[in-house]
Image 1 (tube, rainbow, N blue to C red):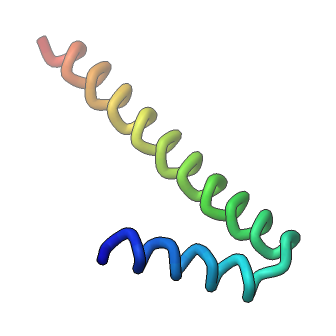
Image 2: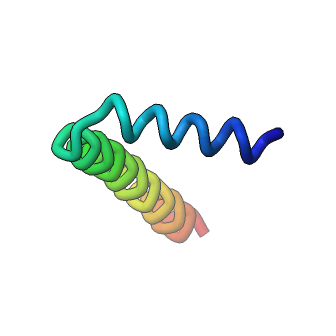
Length: 55
């Protein structure tokens, strides 16, 4: 049942979005994931270096 739902969602997406819109959506999602990951890495590095100064 789950596979059927997944396949129907994929088919629905392919039929409703043109190829340019689909690519645009993929790149927007990728851009936001990239921003989130960069911010997370900067925060982690900040925490590591700030703890090192306190010791």
